[in-house]
Length: 313
Image 1 (cartoon, rainbow, N blue to C red):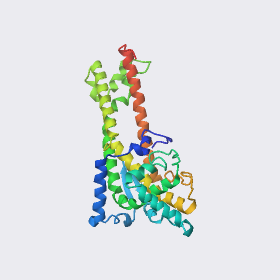
Image 2: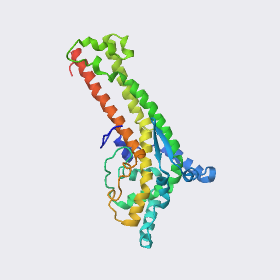
Image 3: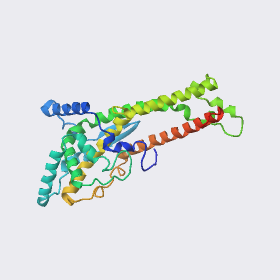
Image 4: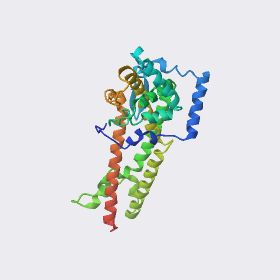
């Protein structure tokens, strides 16, 4: 896996506005929650079942320890009588300010540690806003964690399918020898290493084929980054999961330690300490490195075409 750090190609999905969904989808999700609350499904069953929630990631296993999930039940430990007034104020704020999960997630996103990269989050401004949003997510979190395994598994499977197709469309870029041959030795010798689809084509058709493949890859990437797309949905799941896992710590820090706690200083990055959870960041960095390599190779290809066909840049 990549040892990269800092921002990557998926970091923009840490911002709340970049993972928003439309009203139709929010209504559908709200009805599902309503249906569950009517006794149609025991939302607590899987969460209280213990063990780990395990999701495969391209052959890797990610386990969310049951202890982390269970922490939603002990977020207010140690509040004490003195903090009761503050607690009630935050409860009231959470109740009145957040009418849906989207708003609460938007408040937290970018202000807590992310599963997408390891960049230090930005201070949120008023800490009670972050605490109130976290409290709202705690209220909603049990039912959502019940669905998390299925949502993550679906998102990961769709992302893997997307990436396999995306890699295939960019496969001709991998070996630069045929379009960027070494300066010494017979330039045409590199043609023996042509990817199979290109061997039967003339040189001019070969160039056109590559440009068409590039267009398909760009369109596929753009679609995957839109709502319901494979990239969007996986990053949305990672964003929300990170929020749910940190909500208990935020509420506990605000109520038990200091009602004027300076976020995110009071919350340490726990994701780098857990090898299984850190897998998510490693996947994002690794895929980001691949994207950078494809872009660099494509620029080399375009430069070679300019040179060969005497095209002005």
